[in-house]
Length: 350
Image (cartoon, rainbow, N blue to C red; front, side, top):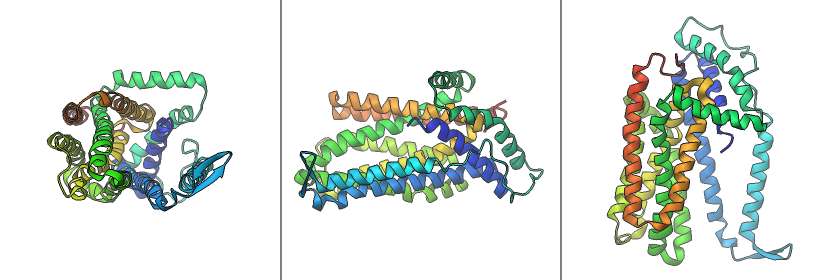
């Protein structure tokens, strides 16, 4: 999660360059790249979740390693995950420094359009911010904390958007602890691990498949409607858990699906539209602190939920998740109103 500040700057700068090259509005470029990022990320996550399921037949075959018996499936999973991590680290060395790179040679000279002017201004304004994001020294840690808190005072709209990040974290905790951990285990018995793994992969699959749908819907009915629909999915999941007081009805393999479909629908908006919203609202200059706020709100809510849910009953957990979703809906509506009423509220605050 520590890379999100740098990711925010890089995403915003990439979108601005894309807007210049394609001669489109920065908001459209943000939406395109956010959807592409979400689709790639979720597809990879789906593959990683499907991997252990595919290797289940090898789980009973043991291999003696360093004095311990390890299942063949766990050994393969560990080796593949390690290879993926090393490949990702090597790939980061090939990432271009957009703050210092010259404009693409094949890009046309900036036309007299608001898209080109905004993109060029954003590139210049973000250069210093991007450089400080990529320097990893102790003093920078405290400067980043200060930037996050300073953004609260200078752009309080970020606090109105925080409940949206928290709602996703609490909803994921509710699904994992109460649905997968209890309802699925109770309904499927010995097959609970396989059922839970398949359902968990279903969340990623639904979220990935809905990326082009959500982007098309955002163009047609507006981004607020799509993100509100995602938040309503989290609220509906909490309501469904609240209504399921006696366990899953038969057949369990059918009645369990709505829980994961709702989480997948909510996550589709969270992973794609949500990033585009932050990139549009805060621009390259403020994106490191803004994206750090995403991690802060989501991580804090997830941690609180996972630590407190074991001591709460099903109804209390559902009410907590539902309340978070309701607060997120109100907060997001207030944020959109504030953004629309603020001159330069999108991307380049005055």
